[in-house]
Image (cartoon, rainbow, N blue to C red):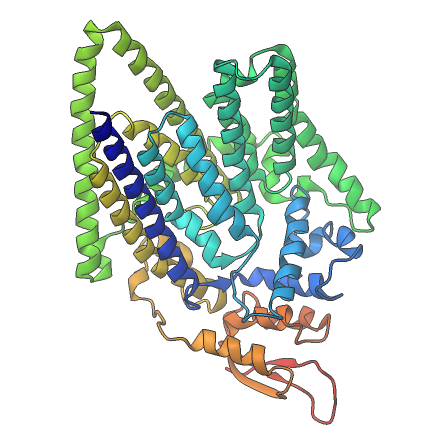
Length: 548
């Protein structure tokens, strides 16, 4: 019997590893395709500023990170650590291009996205009582979700990847404190020190991106015993919002002025305005915002399962994937209903079963409450930044963290066949990647060439599958050509606009020149440009000239 149990455990472990390897292989194929990876053009506004003094780190970078007019455009001074990480990331990549062909989305954030966050997410699921194989499958779904893929495929601010990592890490930290507190594995003094460490880490994470603030209510709801164990912990924890507010509205503006920059008035930053006056409740209960809530929720759910109207794709392959996933969902719902019925009957006669079921349902209820709050928050923030309808691409990448926590809690009581779970996970990941490639292509077309409105793609007013999709290696070959020959050539022609990041990263233009190159950002009229050196001059710098 013991041998049979060990064999079953080994098989489930192998199945989990196989699915995780499958997810990572899909990601590897994605990032190796230069048609699928790109640099968001807002990056051009600060990359030249960062690299003006060269790729080496210097003391001036300490002041540069506070220049909100370059990094934020508007008086937003809430995430200075994101700007500092941006400086480090940009300079590391510029140095790395001395040894390898530039990659448009390669970033230090990949360490968080592809290694630390998935690993900690798996550990968090295990701490919450999710079986090993199921925790591995849920982690694979998180890796293959469009939220993670959009952060890997698109090089933009490091704020969202690090904020997501911070949310996961804080929840894992709190879950570990809960486990050790329950089992008295640590003396009370060491537990308090560990709790203070958690609070300190949370506070620092709030200065990478405001979405990291979600860890605060999530920890209260998931692990109230950790926060409310004694008065010292409660005071320490509930002081965080006060300190954060003081830093946002007093400390950071003062430091910015001392550094020689204009005073950033957060009250005049439109998304923050409702939080500084009496308009917050009016904004929250605005009928237009509430009306969009079910629309955004349906898009979040369909994105998470890789589902979109199969008739739009015109593909038998995707249609078969869609049908398979829908059948999986129907089966799980039926299985869940049957399990619930049997459990109710068992609870009536078995006190032990009642206690186990009650504890499981408390955790499930907590995950439902947290997910509901996060969904409401996501819908609200979309309206604050005037992107009323949006999927899981960049802006709402925190949502799947809480959805998959809920899904893990929901599925752990169903005792599903492990091979079935593995096959279902692979189907969803495959559909998610298939769908993501087309939506990502629309996202890039929207930012660089203005050939489509991204909001219309998300709502299926424009068929994402009908937009032209490149499969050749032209972008990679052109990148390699510029990288290898820019020191010897005087003219390089036919450069797609999406490769404009190279003029900054390879320092091809004279420092400061690109401030006037506004055609390269948010214009859409320029499809290609050329790099030209002035005749008769030995200047090592190029001029960027629109050519088509």
